[in-house]
Every structure is written in structure tokens, then in C-alpha cells.
Amino acid sequence: MTEINLQNIGEKVLKSVSSRGISLAEVFLTRSRDLSIDVSDQQVETMKLAEEIGLCLRLFHHNRLGFAYSSDFSDTALDQMVTQGIDNAQITAQDEFYTLPEPVTYYPEMDLIDPQIPQVPVSEKISLAKEIEGRARQYDPRIKITERCAYSDAFYQVVIMNTLGVYGQYQGSYCGASAFLVAEEGGDSQTGFGFQYRLKYQELNPEAIALEAAEKAVRMLGAKNISTQTMVTVLDPYIGTKFLGLMGNSLSSEAVQKSKSFFAGKINSQVASPLITIIDDGARKGEIMSAPFDGEGVPCQKNDLIVDGMLTGFLYNTYTGAKERKKSTGNGIRGSYKGMPEVGTTNLYIAGGDTEKEELLKQANQGIYITDVMGMHTANPISGDFSLGASGLLIEKGELTKPVRGIAIAGNVFDLFSNIDGVGSDLTFFVGKGSPTLKIAKMTVSGC
Image (cartoon, rainbow, N blue to C red; front, side, top):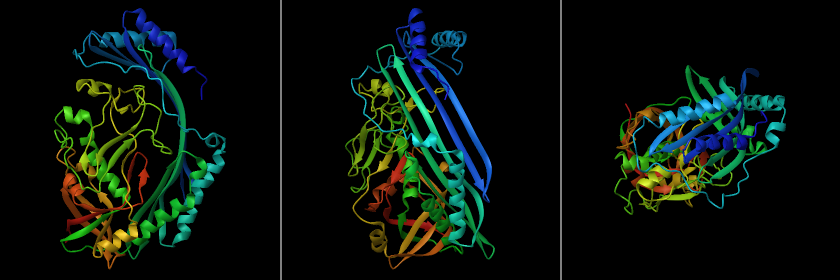
């Protein structure tokens, strides 16, 4: 990546802001390099290498917010950005809770860089994507179409500093690979996917990705509808993260303060099954969403949100924390240098239990194992109401048997989490969210 000293740039901007009479300001700087490779039929369909660098300025003047950003680090551009930020602060509404975090003496030490990732030749990364496709095709001749087999990686650097003395910087990297396949038989076609994202290149397992995608596609061939009935329902960990994401909005202090959270006013109340513990941990070892600090320079940390079904807390950034006279939980999240820190999750997960998935299926005896849902974006994040298309596998005598599709599940996510009576030991992360297998005592499944 381009050799530019981000710290020096940030100090220059803060100095310029201070010289204009602004005492409360922050600079956030990032640069990144992203590689993506798509393969189909053993041919490279696309390969992209993108580099991005930029910074943003956030300042507060007379309790008014000014914000501006730039990807041009020339003196002229930086001066224009500072002027723009100050001008913006003249027209925004006053808010007494605008503030910046104070400096800290400690950030968690994190191993976020794999030096091997940039050293591995691109040809080897292409071979890895091809290997995934090849192994998937070998799994079963009914795998007919490769929608996409891919490899990707990223290298990034983050620097934050403010006029109160906050300074932090870190570098990180991660890599990932995926497969999206189609199996066909007798006029029926079914899709399957598998993917992994890891901090270390050596931790990628192309065989496991290929087998997961191929197995998911093949096992759904010949899927049938079923009649409407109330069933014991078991959620695959991937589906568990989908419902966790729907609930996650209500765990934001911003949603609470805007009266958009189901959990408002329910601290220390039982809001889920006693088997459910939900945690957000921005410093969790080995996860690609982990970092020593958030988008404001507040140390990332483990935050217990729901413990044994009891609501214990919400996620805060500096602004929402100030409104309640509380400290930020390290959840001021930025999508890029072009945005301001909003309250968000890092590594949000449902803690695993002590029951293996196979035992949960035996306990279910007769029911359905949900492996895919459609239309989660239509669910109401405030009320938690959902109505989703779904597919999966029947559970008969404690074993997964016939594939099922064309069904629908509807209800309320908060009721769903209250009705969980089994939590698997197989906690699995899908990028920033994790869930084990979940067993729900009963759910209405609408069929034909």
C-alpha cells in the first residue's frame, strides 16, 4: 500500500482545526487493500484489487456538529476539508450531548495480522478457489452449476486521534473463501453454499467449504411441501444468526432512546429463555470483526447483553452514553471514513450450550430442521414480527430425513427466543454474528 504516514496527516489536520479556534475535534484515517477472485468452470471470471485511503474530520463547536471527509491528502484538499467541517458546524442543530471520548491507558493487544496473506502468490489463491469448485463437483455428479466459487482477502490500517489526547492505530488482515452451487436432478434444482472467513490463511479449509456447499445442494433435491402443522423446530446455526440479527437492533441504546426497541424499560427483566445468553465482544480472540478500539478510540470489550434470559444492558457509543451518563461500551462503529460512528455490533453471538446437535435432534424426535429462510429483510426490527419463506429437513425419530421446501414460518422473534428449550454446543460464527443450533419447543409451520 502507498507509504503515507497517517499519524502525521492526522496531527496536521487537528493542528489546523485547533488554529481556527475549535477545541473538540477528531480525525479518523483508514487505508485498505482488497483482493477478490471469482472462479467458475475452472476459469477466473473476475479478479479485482482495490486500494482505498481516506480520512474524516468530526468536530464540535458550540455544541454543533461538523463533519467532512477526503481521500485527497494534499495540503489544499485538507484545508478545504477543515473549512467544510467548520462551515457545517455553523448550520447543524445544537446538542448538549455531543462529546468525544477521553484517552485511555490501555488497548487490548490483538493478533490481527497474518503476514502470509500478502506473501501467497495470486496464482495460489486462484488455485484455492478452483480447488473448492473441483472438490464440490467431485462430491456428487448432480452438482451441475457453479454460481460462484471465490477467494478474497483484505489488509487494512486504522488510525484515530482527537484533541483530548486519544490516539490509537492498528493493522489487520483477513481472508475468506466461498462456494455457491446448484444441484440438478429430474428437473429439480437446488442451491447450496459454504463459506469461511479467517484471520489466518492456513486456517482456510477448501475441502470443508466445498463439501458443505455440495451437501447442502444435494440434500435438498426432491424437496416436498408439507401440511400446515405445529412442530418442534430446530434452527441451523446460520439461521440462528439471522434471527439474532433481527433481535440485535433492540439491543442498541440508540434504538432505546428513539423508542424503537422492544427492550426499552426492560433492564433486569426476563426477555428470553433462561438458556439464552447473548454477548457482544469486540475483543474476541480469532474473529475478523475484533479490534483494539472502536470507531471513536474507545477500547473494544466484552458486553453481556442478555444473561440466562435476563436483559442486562445495551450497546453504547460516546453520544448515546452521554445521554444516559454512561460510558461507551466500545460500540461506535464506522462503515468507512465516509461515515460517522453509529451504535453497532461487533462479534454478536448466542453463547453455546453443552448439548451436541445430534442430541438436540434426538430430543426433538419429530419436527423440522430449518436450513434456509427468505425475506428476513421484511421482518419488523422494532416489533420483531416476521413472516418468512423457509426450507429444511424433516426430523423423524431424531434423525434428519426428507427435504422440505415451500413452507412458511411466522411469529415474533422475542417469542421465538423465549420458546427456546435447547441450545447446542456448536457455536458457529458467520462473520460478525454467531449462534449454536437452537431448538424451539413449538412453531407453526405453514405448508400447502
